[in-house]
Image (tube, rainbow over all chains, first blue to last red; front, side):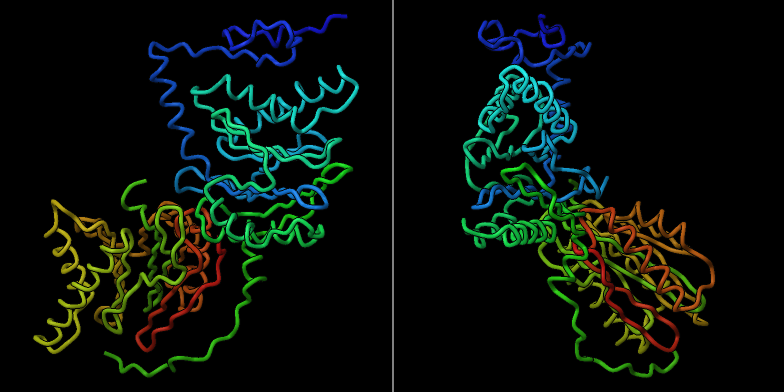
Length: 273
Length: 204
């Protein structure tokens, strides 16, 4: 029975789309072009609309027991906080996670697309799970083919496959990097400071979770565009598990409790005017 | 982001029964980065007159210093404190002097005038006075503050109730703004005492 690939055929000519070896499941889904007189101007405006949107803090690192993934939960539009409860860690499948930074719609769609159209189809066609390397490469190639069209995606693909834990950084410019530690978003410099100074390869799961939580907390403290809830997930040999979701406002007072201070000035009677 | 949103601020003043309260957030930032969480935005001119300055922090500091200078001269010459209405006119005049190169500030003036009647007013960055009978707001969280105050305000509140209402309105509004918050500062002024409190808020 031939698979129905009409949904996958592209109206736009993509690089390498005429290659026979792709077997019908790697071509990106087709999108209709908008009916405008000035397509380039429209694209420019669309890019500008999404541009300030990488207001977030996400991080992931590999350690002895697997991969730890953490993120905040704030969505901001310029100065306005539109939500404090956004899910920025996307569950691609039971053993792979993706993080969201940049345009929310872009990240959600492409992660779902990766999970259903790419990873699941690969599993069914090849009778074995796709590797983290493979999934991240396919996502990077798809995003590269949309380069310059205004997608805003800064994601990390974290998972556990036959070779052990895997972590890749993939962005909408088409970049793909393999590494042991990453942090993405406007709060990433603050998170890197805490993460890099506290990181050791041989940590226990609790220590690694606390490091991730602390790094996200410090980023939410300093960065205006990060806040809400610090979610921490762990990816182990049996798949991912959500470890905690702590409100950052309460974490501050847990790490720095308010102590009663000495009275500096007594109240003085003010003579009525 | 505009120049008014460079440092981030939230200011609100509210009228009660023979008293008033003025509150601000405590964050000083450079666009999205937070630099300080104990920035003083409200200043005392004299025991019955307070001014809060929102907007660009450097202009707020300079404007406050110029106003203090003018008030001290007034005290030397007139041998008394300035009335809040007079002070508001002074602020308005000082801001309009710079009509074609303005201070990027929005002041909130709150004081007790004759017969202990509370007086509040705000001006825009070039000195247009807006007198209000209930509350005035300023800063990047201004729109949220309007909504929160409108919903929670009641006329003729006693000082304790005024404190609760204003604190809740401020904290709720700054929780919807990336650029302000990180705690709160509130002054409750009655004819006999001035109470200053720090509010515990979300630090994100």
